[in-house]
Amino acid sequence: MLPVPEKRQVSITPVSVPVPERVDAAGKERKKADSKTIIKIGIIENSQGVAIGAESDFLVVDMETGDALAEMSSDNIYSVKAGGGKIFLDKRQFRSKIRIKPKNSYSELSKISVNGKMYRGSIILRRQDKNRVSVINELGLEEYICGVVPCEVGPDWPLESLKAQAVVARTFALKNMGKHRKDGFNLCSKTHCQVYGGASRETEKTNKAVYETAGEVITYNGGIISSYYHASCAGYTEDVNNVWESFQSSNPEYLSSVKCKFCRDYRWYNWTYKILFDTLASRLRNAGYKVGKIESIRTIGRTSSGRIKQVLIKHSKGKLRIASGKFRMAMHPDKIRSTNFIVKCKNDVAYFKGHGWGHGVGMCQWGAKNMAEDGWSYKKILEHYYKGCKVETEYK
Ligand SMILES: [Zn+2]
Image 1 (cartoon, rainbow, N blue to C red):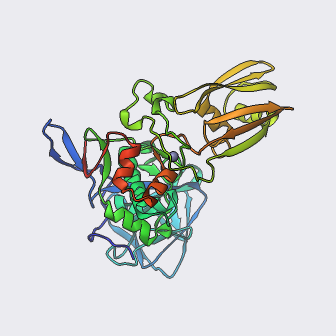
Image 2 (cartoon, rainbow, N blue to C red):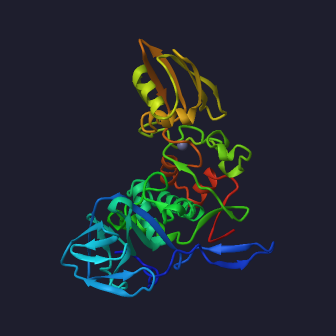
């Protein structure tokens, strides 16, 4: 059962960035995420068709007028397809963009299913080029966070670490509302933004973490922060300017390296990976780097947190110097799990040995879990990983 703090209708309200609440002493607008804050999540793109159903009877609604165009029964699963500029639900035809919403939004049984997964709020179906279909889930911010926390961390983790994850995920969402503007939604449901699994993934404990921190975000000097996080830092988190070019000229205090002795028991604290030179070369080519036959690979420099700065690859056509993060992405971030590694080469094979998983910036999720087990509160955990920050409900 979801402990909803108040009844609310989320279905027809257009996406809005939180409303300015008041003006602070410096004359800056302060914002607040409340129960009226709505978010649009792209859950399916370019599909040939999807299956739609619902827990209770639902309406097909005109996107512009909000008028109900049809009432559909919860007894059926409808096949959604696009064709001839229209959207079809089984044989019934509608305009190229429609909204599906429960007939009674206040009912406990108000979830809609898309390909068997349950979602809160409403569903927008849109015809894309070549008669493909895209699906957007529009729902309240807190309901969205309920579908993120159990996908990003273990739902059985200690409550304070789940609360830390809820605040980090909410902060990330509000800071990145414009990330997919060109696609017609706020965030996608994959690791590119944050993994979101809808209501099917919710658990009582993760929902409790969300509602006990409702509206809270992380601020630095009152401003909402870029709340990056990663699985395990393996000793020290990383200065953000070593990772992303956009931070080259500024390394905010709150994204600077901190010591973490809390993730030592992480499964991938130590990892290894071996790859044939030929495979490595083809991955580099797939990522757009022009290389010949690989001759040697070595690392160049280390950051203060111990991560390597660059990789130097000698090949039959010359040399390639590549930033370690870009090298990691070209190889695959689930294979070269971090940029904290050494590499040895023998008989045209590269052997990597490394530590931790992820870019290393911001909160170390496994560290947060162990800190919570040691009795740290979620606020103390967040203040540890984001130096100089506060947890607040109002922000600039
Ligand atoms: Zn750590």
